[in-house]
Image (cartoon, rainbow over all chains, first blue to last red):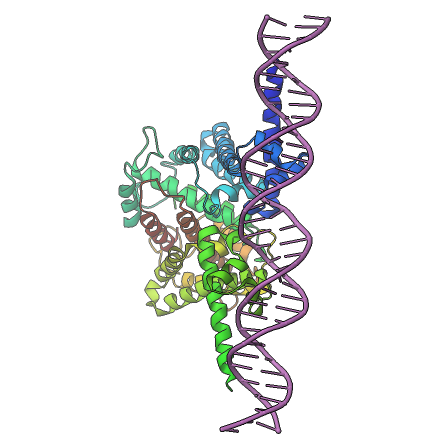
Length: 228
Length: 228
DNA sequence: TGTACATCAGTGAACGCGCGTTCACTGATGTAC
DNA sequence: TGTACATCAGTGAACGCGCGTTCACTGATGTAC
């Protein structure tokens, strides 16, 4: 099958187009991603790209799902490679490192949604994969906060308990056996808290405030581990 | 001075233009804000708007500084009106309520930055005003977490202590007498944690997960009050 | 190995569109005497 | 109160630009016999 060469070339061209699109994303945001400009940067004319993508929307969709998958995989791998005791830290740093290395891609998926753009259902599924990794990492923390008052693993606040009850059996985002509400609450709050620091950092909201965001991040991670 | 009428009309027209711009922002994002389209919606031709704004950039800048100021004022007022014991909750809910009521404006200032857009220095100043309100609200919490192990008000983790040291005397964003590092750490983490829940909520990242974001928010606020 | 045909990559012209911004101009609204 | 002038609001035409997308077409690369 000599047609395999063509296949390979197709894939290669698609990847190159997406790579160029990412540089445009970095320079001018989502709105700056232009089919014609991508083609020109690749040394070809605009319409040629329509051999590889049905249109701009498909290209955008691909960028988004790629980013979701990439982040999910990088995180899952980092967690898997870490010793059980370090899994939670590995999770936190994997997400932050990925975001800091490619801020535009992080904001592409967790930033302001592209207006009038409908994410394909596939997206939700991949996003759930990251959630699953967070859940797993949180599970390694159980019993680790024995220094807390009350029973270890017990919610400290009434509202924390309510959140746990509220989350019992919620969503399809926590497949597997370990789907009790408290764990989900932990995972959810881990997500929101990591995202809080990471997103503000990546958006440059800390610039000019005279401190190192990574110190803030470390403190937040340790607080999470402490079960707070 | 009959010229006052003209002045008033000018101001009114500017406000109307900004209002229309906000609806465009909601519908098509930052990129969808168009001078010509705004003018048309107001029943006039494109160039007419150049009597009121030097260009698109000034309009955008105005939208952004307005949003910063609006949020800062709404929050400051809510905190001021609350009883001392409720100040922190008032702060948290003021920010969230504002964001939920006008998600696009929240994302305009705390979402993905507009590419190639340089925020005026004035912006930082107004943003610091909100930070100041957060600091004040955090100050009301001191000693409120006596149920914690260790001295009340003392950092529990090594990294929390390090963050506090790191923030001693940091930035011009904490004017006034109460500028010790621990308080700033608190304020900073209050900000990032509230933002984490609010931004993901406002961006619709929780949709389809089968839970009520406000329950999560309440739990997070109580956890912050507890000093966690 | 050679020829006839099918598939695919890429071109160039053209489509309609909306954008931000400028410019010379018309009318209306204000001010000064 | 009335007239002469200045200021301002808004128009309409025009600028150059880049966008996404279609279409008919040329060449190259593959396949089948």
